[in-house]
Structure formats: structure tokens, C-alpha cells
Length: 412
RNA sequence: GGAGGGAUUCCCGAGUGGCCAAAGGGAGCAGACUGUAAAUCUGCCGGCCUUGCGCCUGCGGAGGUUCGAAUCCUCCUCCCUCCA
Image 1 (tube, rainbow, N blue to C red):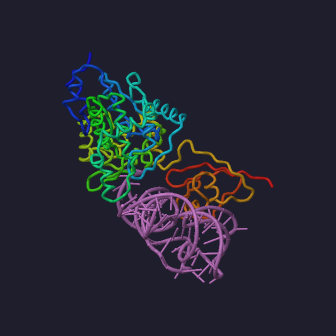
Image 2 (cartoon, rainbow, N blue to C red):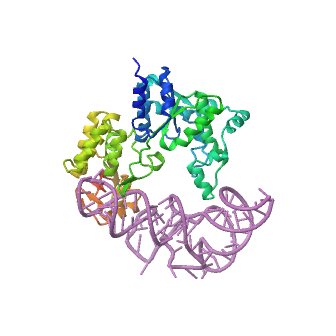
Image 3 (tube, rainbow, N blue to C red):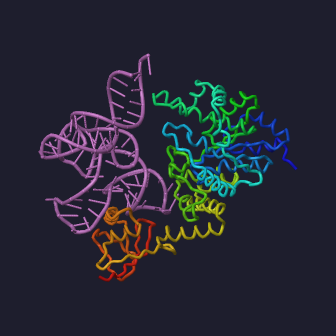
């Protein structure tokens, strides 16, 4: 029993930024056939993170409404890199790497997507063999002036910074993917709007009905901060190191989520939580009125997300350990055990470095001098301190790096 | 094809012969404060050890000048801008 088109539109509209256009989309929904919905993913970052899940949840909604989602791995366009002015042409990935990344995508993506309604494709399938004539035809579909409307290009023109010709190919190729797949809808992050619009124009040039466009908000990374009541920060991205990866172990995922600033927590609730808007608003009111502690509300968020990508039991356990280690300052149940050998007293700085708690001996000395090191529960601030052989020590560096260091006597 | 500008420690960016492991900012780490929040303040921020006003590595690459070079000279590599 298919959902009525108007109702489908309602579901699709929820939480989106752009929808071009509702009228066109409604008409396609009314056709009654399953629509082809394309979403592109960069092949160089096989670690999916929470940022990806925003769009993936929207994909899932389409699937639940009976449509087909094409999970398109941009292995060919990945060689170019979406133009940012920074990126260099990337070396093509080997067939093995592509296959491996695709595999990783599959296992991670299906934590959210419905495998039955997902088609996995790679755009090298058709782009790698595109010949000169085809390229000319494609390039003829768009003008330089319109290309320069793109923010990033416009900015570089203004600043007289270089733009390589091949960067123009990225949006064109992405558009060509839509031609090849006869897309009804292309879905992406808000930052993709330009590329998606190019897709519409190019499709028209090929005599196809232009795809509808749906964009969702871009999730800020864990390092985003509040400024003048607004959230300011780069998008979540692996290269910026501000992600919460789906594959992060429970403790790590929990810890990362607890470290976000309060205003960001609401953003995450809005874009990632199962709670509906009203429930989130209620939580927000509770915190504002002092009825709830922000920390507890953040714990709730962290547990929900860890529970979804692992399981509720793991989430509860992670919460417990978090409390013990970070609130109580105790050592976790399992600390790495390191065994070192020495005949004479072993310098503490050296031991810390060898145990992997610091980058180098010099670094360890600095940490000791700044008061970051505890041995068996008491702070050591003498950089020349040493550990006697034949004993075991609990060494703590910083707030949460621990190791059980055993110094074994070494014979002559 | 012609003219000019540039390459500095993780990033940006000072530095035109010794006082430079190299200003300043960012990032990062640590301490204080906390809710392991965030913001703020403070410190650190190449490596090694026999911890010494010690040694080694370091300013695109290779040579050279000099008692001494990130700073001067030569060649090379790469990048950018403008003109055509």
C-alpha cells in the first residue's frame, strides 16, 4: 500500500534545506513508479561519520517510501576532488582500493540504509571510458559564466587565485552521472547545491527531464563552537579530524559526543536524534529553566547515538566507564600493560615515551614538568624521576592516558 | 614566449650574516576553572642522552663564500602573478 504522494512529499520535506521543486517532485511521485534517487559519496573517505548519516537518513526515508536509492561512489570524480582551491589532483585509486572502499561503504552504510532498495554504483563505470567527443558534448552544456557563479570559483576570481580547467569538470561529471542514471532526484548536503543545479541544466541538454533536488543541512564537526549565540565551525570531515565515525568504538564515540559544546548539542539533536522537534524543544526548555542539567541531556544524546551504531548495552557500558574515568578520575578497568626491561633505575620520561603515552622522551619530560604525570596516584613533577626495576607502576598522563608499566630487572 | 614574485618548524606567516630551535597567530598538548563541556587564564610546543650555559637535526635541493649563513653567490626543482 503506497503512501499517498502528498504525504510522501511531507516526509521528504521535513528537515531539508532546498527542495527544487516541490511541484516537479509531486508530479513524479504521482506517477506511482519507484523514483531513482542518487547520492554521491567520495571514495577517499571510507570511514562514514555522523555527517554522512544526515543525508543517509533522508535516503532511508525515500527507501521507506518505496523508492530506489543509488549509492554512487565517486571514484572517478574523486581524482579531481570537489573544487576548493586547496585540493590537488589526486592520483587515481587502484581497482583494489576502490573495491575495498566500496565494501567498507556497504557494511557501514547498511547500518542505516535498506540493502533491498540500494543500488551501489561507481562513476568510473561510465566516466573512465568517456571519449573526447562525448566530453565536448558534455562541456557544451554549460557556460563559463554560469560556472563562475559557484561561490568558490567566484571567490578565487576575485582574489586572482588560480582555477584549473579540470576543476570545471567536477560539476560536469557529477551532472553526467545523473544523465547516465536517469535520476529523478539527486540528494546531497546543502553545500552541494551548485553541483546539483548543474545536473538539472545538463540533463535538459541531453533531452531529459531535469532531476529534482533535495538538500539537507551540513553537520558541523565536533570542534564547532558558539559565537554570539550562533554555531560556528567547519563541516564534519575526516580531513579536518572533527568527526565521529560510525566505526568508532563505543567509548570513543561517547567521549567525542560529550566533548561538544552545549549549543552544538542542540544541533546534533535536531539532525541526528530520533526525537521529534517537539521533544527536543521540551528538553531545551528544561535546560533553559534549570530543570535539567545540560550534561545529563548530553549523556542522553551520546547514549542514543552509541546505542544506534553499536547497541544499547554497549552505550550503557560506555556511559558507566565514562563516569568512572572522567568524573571519578579513576583508571579504567582495562589499562594497557607495558613491560620494559632495565638493569638500572629507568628514567620516568623514557618509560612514558616507550609506553606510548608521549611522543618522545623530550615530550615526556615537558609533560612531567607541566604537572601532567601521576605515578600510582601521586603527581610527579621532577623530570629526572626514575622507576626502580622489579616493580609495577600505574602511570597516568594527562586526564585520560593510562598505562600499567612493569619494569623488569634485566641481567647483565 | 617575455617580465616579475615566491618556497621558513603541523598550518599561516615574520625574519637580509652572529643575540635563530628561528617573532606572531592558529592548531595541538598540559595545568587551573568546570559538567572530561564550551569560553577564559597560564605554561609547553624538533630530537637525544652521560641534563650540559651538552650534542644532533632544521629554514625547497645541491654546491660555494665566510671564523660564522634561513639570511650572500652559483646551478637545479617546484609554485604563483602579470603581459602575449
